[in-house]
Every structure is written in C-alpha cells, then in structure tokens.
Amino acid sequence: MSDNEVARKVKVRVKPKLDRPKLYRVMLLNDDYTPREFVVGVLKAVFHMSEEAGYRVMMTAHKMGSCVVVVCARDIAETKAKEATDLAKEAGFPLLFTTEPED
Image 1 (cartoon, one colour):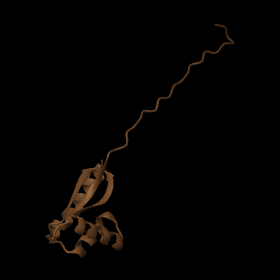
Image 2 (cartoon, helix red, strand yellow; image 1 turned 180 degrees about the vertical axis):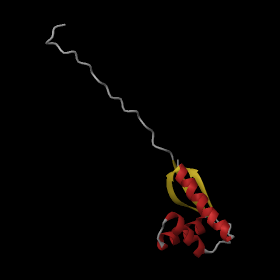
Image 3 (spheres, helix red, strand yellow; image 1 turned 120 degrees about the vertical axis):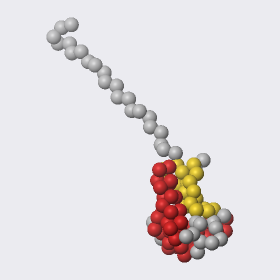
Image 4 (spheres, one colour; image 1 turned 45 degrees about the vertical axis):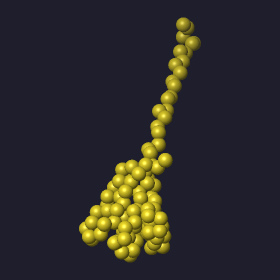
C-alpha cells in the first residue's frame, strides 16, 4: 500500500426498529347510582374534558352501557382509570373506569 492510497472504512449505521407501544382504551361503565353532574366533573378533572364533551361521553355511556373516554399508552390509561375510580370511591359512588387493549 502506498502513501497516496487511503484506506476507507465504511461505517454502517443501523437504526433499530422500534415498535410503537400498544394502545389501551379507558372505558366509562354506566351505573344507575352516580349522579350525572359528578360523572361530568370527574371527566373534566381527570381527563381534562370540556363541560360539553364530558356530558356527551357521560350520555353515551348512559345510553349504550359503556363508552370510550380516551385511547392512550397502557401506563397512562391505567393511571387515569384508577385516578377517576378512586375519586368516585372517595365520594361514595360506584362509578367505574376500566382499561382494555385496543384491537
């Protein structure tokens, strides 16, 4: 190898392919005991919904039996569902929020 020749090394950059985290739904389940105003208040406080959006979600759950509140990453969904359910328990209501994987 002469002094004029430069040895070239090819650098290969490999980007690891990352999978997106699976999404989970937070579901509001209807019950016949929790006042509508309280449900809307929980939706506003925990999920940062407007009064109108909270009312629509609450009425959908009331008519259909359940309603999707939000779709997000698993840890966030479980935290929000637990926070909302705990608020209801503290107030003495059986309001229930659950999480389930999105298909």
